[in-house]
Structures are given as structure tokens and as C-alpha cells.
Amino acid sequence: MAGGDENMGDKLEAPPDFDGPTSRRRFTDVLCTLLLWCMWISMTGLGIYAVQNGDYRLILYPLDYDGNICGTDYGDIDMTDYPYLYYVNDYSGGVCVKECPTLENHTDPYTLVTYNGLFQVDGSYVTNNSIAVADYSVNNDTLTCTDELCYPNNDPVQSFKSDGVSGGKGFAYYALDTYEVMWRCVFKDNATDTLDAIVNPNGDEFAADVVDMATDMNENIKQGYDFWHNLFGDLWVSRYFILGLGFGAPLVVGFFYAFMLRIPGVLPIMVWVSILGTIAIVFAGAWYAGDTAKQWKAADPPIYTEQEINVATYGSYALYALGGLLVLLFLFMRKRIALAMGCVKETSKAIMKMPLIILFPVLQGLGFMLFMIAWTVYAVNLASMGTLKTQSFAAGNIQITVRYFEFSDFVKQCGWYMLFCFFWSGQFIIALGEIVFAMAVAKWYFARDKSRVGSLTVLSSITTSMWYHSGTAAFGALIIAIIKMIRAFISYLQKKADEMDSSIAKAILCCCQCCFYCLEKCMRFINKNAYIQTAIFGSSFCTSAKEAFFLILR
Image (cartoon, rainbow, N blue to C red):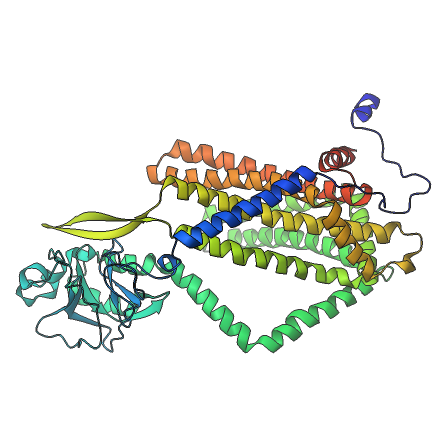
């Protein structure tokens, strides 16, 4: 054991005149600071290049089947007056319309929205004003509906199976009631149900893939749009309640809670009542399951099967075993629990002495928000730097063409680099905050005269951490960012494995993902303790990480 202790490094002992974090500091991990700035400069250069060569409208606004951007003058046809996309097939092919159609009867099965405008047969009631489709007649190769192609014998059932509609894979589809989501016209459920009853009167499986495409493909967009739309609407309506109850009240409650924790006996009562309550709930569940199993077994005539009774019985045994393990676990860890309570109590004292420390996360959030504004502008413009391609699909005896964007290897590599910049910058902001917190609390804890410690201590910790130890925060953040990039690439490979339907590859990649997830958690733990060493002793990341690692082992 003695040899093992020696291998763990010298025991940390404070000098007799130790009075808190050292005042003799030097710049730590300067190389990482330079690398971080180089990353930001290169990201800005890449962003400027993307803004100059990309067009954010390609990402925000929908693309029709002919390569025009609805609501803009991008493409061969000026679509400024037609900002919405109405889907026609499940290949994401659609046409630009002036407004998303709203139909009182949910659907007009005798009106088709096609690549070349509306096609109507006897029985239709929709007018051209109801669904104003852009003029695509300038294209000589635009597919056009005829009775034979799209509506044989004026029969909706035959129309659905025709080459023009082709069950949602053609160049025409029925007029349906819709709602708008991010400039896309999404079919309403009652409209598709009504159409199902008309084109599928025999009750066969409804195979309208365009319905699945226009709803399922947009479901994530819809959920995101609904979320942000409702979020901002609710935020504006309840802005005073948010400022009062969401910001002011938690501050008051937090200070009150911190004050209560300083009262002798309050914290141990709260902690041990929670622990004993948890154990009591587990044992109560075990007793209830066992008693229920006995009642089921004694019932005459039997109500539950033997298998259900066994499940309840064995569940009772498992809960009793779990309760026993919890009792043993808390008994063995009682000293650790007492130590944790002591840390919480001291933290509450520090917060009461330095109330400004509670507002520091707001400063972190503002910094991250400024970064995200620039990063989002760069990323959106970069994502628009694709080449417009044409793809053809067979629909019966005709070919359906749609346009899509294909990205070069350079753009894809730039996308990965932008993701790395996001990871590194986000982790840097978190790491710098941990150093600031550690330094402020350490200054309060080790101060011989605590009356000299206050909110100014937080400000001095912020300036000291940013000036001397930004490199250390960048070093630790870089490690986490690299691990996150590896996990992101594994996720990309997992998606490819799903497409290939390779069970072996999916199993191996899943194991790799789990291993790197655990590695990330371990490194976060080591980094946090290394930041504490840096905050107190002013050492570099590697030295701090080594001391923190051996301190944890001891």
C-alpha cells in the first residue's frame, strides 16, 4: 500500500501562510489560446466566404420541382408572389402557390394540382383563385394532365391509379385542405381521411405516399415551427409573469433556500428524510406487490393467471432486495453523504456572501448567444452552397423529374469544421465558467477575513480567469470537443448502417458510441477537478489534471 500511495504523487499540503488562491499567476496553456483564436478567425473567414457565395433563401424557403425557390426570384421563374409550396408527389416535388389552400369540404377530388397548374374535371368546385399556382408554362418540357393520363372515365378511383397521379408518385395530386408550416402547405388529417374514403371506397390500404411525405416529412418541421411559434407567442403574452415568477421569484427562493441551509440541523433533516423516504417507498412497494400476489392467488374463482401472480411475487422479492441494497449503500456511504452536505452548506454561505455569482450564468448565456448568432448565419449560408441537380423517377409510363441540391466534398468538410467550432466554443464557455466559480468560491473559503469577500470577488475572479487561464479552459474544452466530434461521426456512420441494414455494423457502432459516451463523462469529471486546481494554484491544465487525478484516487 505504501508503494501504491507513492505512485499517486505527493500528498497535497497547504503551506502555513496559505491564504487562498495564489496571487502569483502566469499565463497557462497559451498555445491553446492561440489555437482557439485561430479557430474563431478561420470560422469567420469561412463564414464570410459562405455569405458571399451562398444564399440563405435556399435553406429558409422551399424548392419546387423545377429548381425555383418559392417566394424569391431565384431560378428561371420569378416566384416572388408565390411563397408557398404545395406538394405533388412523395419525391418532395411540388409547385409554388400564392396561398396554402383552405377548402370547406376538406378536399376536391375532381381538382388536381399539377406541375402545370390546375386540372379540373366535371364535379370540381375549386376556383383558380382558391389555389393560385405559378405559371410553369414557360418550360417546354412541363408535364401536363389529360383525361387519359390523370382522370380516366372521370372516376376518382381510376384517377388515383393513373400515370399522372400514380398513387402519390406522379406529377399531379388532389386539392386538399392544408395549413402552412415554414412556407410549406401540409395536408390536414381530416382532408386525407376524406380523400381516402373517396379514392379507396373498398377499404383497402390507403397508399397515398404523397400524404405520408407531405405530413410525415414535415412533421419535424411542423413540430419545430409550432414549438418556436408557440414559444415566442407565449413568451410575449406572459412576459411580465416570466420576469416576475421566472426570474425574480427563483432568486428570492434561492437566497431563502441558501439562508435556510445555514441553520443548524435543517440540511441533515432534509437529506436524511429524503433518503429514508426513498427506502420506505421501495419497501412499501415490495409489501404491496407481495400482498397483491397473495390476494390474487387466494381468489376463488381465479381472476389472474399463474404467470401474472408469479410476476407480482417475483417483483416483490426484487423490490425487497433493492431496498436492502439501498440500506447497505447508504450505510457504507454515510461519510460521503455527510461530506456532500458539508459542501452544500459551505456553498450556501458563499452564495450569501457573493450574490453576484448567481448572475454569472446569465453572462455565459449572453456570450453563447452572441456566438450562436454569428455561427448560425455562417452555417445557414454554408448549407446553401449546393449544386442544383435533376433526378428522374418512373411513374407508370412517364418520367417524373424533381430538383435537389448536391453538396461538394469541400462543403461537407466545411460543415464538419463548423460543427467542431460549435463544440469547442460551447465547451470553452462552460469551462471558463467553471474556473470562475471555483476561483470565487476558493477565495471566499480560504479567506481569513471573510468580511473582505463580496461581489467584487466574483468580478476579480472573472477578469483573472479570462486573462490568465483562458488557455486552460480552451485545452479542456478541446478534449471534450474532439470526443464529441468522434461521437458525431459515429452517429453519422450509424445512420449509414441503418440505411444498409447491417446488424453487425449497427451493434459495433452502438458499442463504440457507448464507450465514447463514458469517456466523455470521465473527462468532464477530470476536467472539472483540474479547473479547481488551476483556480487555486494557477497551474497549467496537464499539471492540474494530474494532481486532480491522483487526488481523486486518494
